[in-house]
Length: 312
Image 1 (cartoon, rainbow, N blue to C red):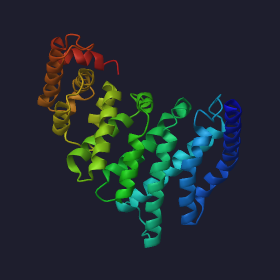
Image 2 (cartoon, rainbow, N blue to C red):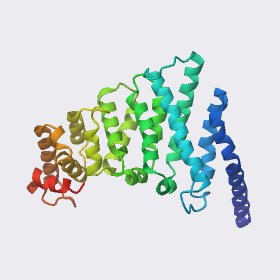
Image 3 (tube, rainbow, N blue to C red):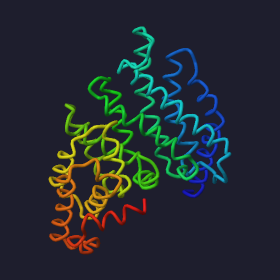
Image 4 (tube, helix red, strand yellow):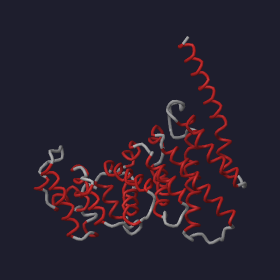
């Protein structure tokens, strides 16, 4: 009887998934509707329906990048990112036209919902290998900018962006590491927020959690990006260092940072004292702890790190 019930449930969910897949393109098309309420409802519906379309349990094996499901997925990432970007540009005074109160309120609602739905779509790790990295990078940048502009945008948008980023699987960050600037940009965003922004306890906890995940996912190239994008996403290097000390950051992470700050790509933009500060901390941590990366870090000089830097 239990077996028969399971078969019945499996069959019911299979039918439900099939119906959702059939309905999905029509719902996605509503993102371009002129009615603000229709668009808002479509964004929410996509968040729920996408599970039955892209989750590994329901998505049949993807054979190539020409899949119709992937085309829709890529369009959704672009469309939702655009809605977030529009609301942020309006808040920052970066768009030439003046919006009415109704238009501005609608843009805020769309951005709020888009953060949540974008987080759901990006969480499907099974799709990552088939998507252009630049598309993921652009989508994540829109979520990061919500945090960067947290002082001037609606609190609900900020909270939704943080929650979306925190809930992303670590496999995604590992996949993007060293392939684009997302991990480095995310770290700069986190440490700028933690140092500068006044916020709720839940938002701060969320950003700290995200910072931990990004740190353990980052490699030398990601930390190079972190320091190289300071003009775009300024953050306090001193605060970053103190945060690492306060949270007793793992030697493996410190070793990657030390390699970055002493590489040819980065050393010219950092003060010598900053470089030695990170190198000294790395040596100190490796002396204290028995670690797989305790490969005589104390004997490594800046020149030796530079030799590794040439491989970039």
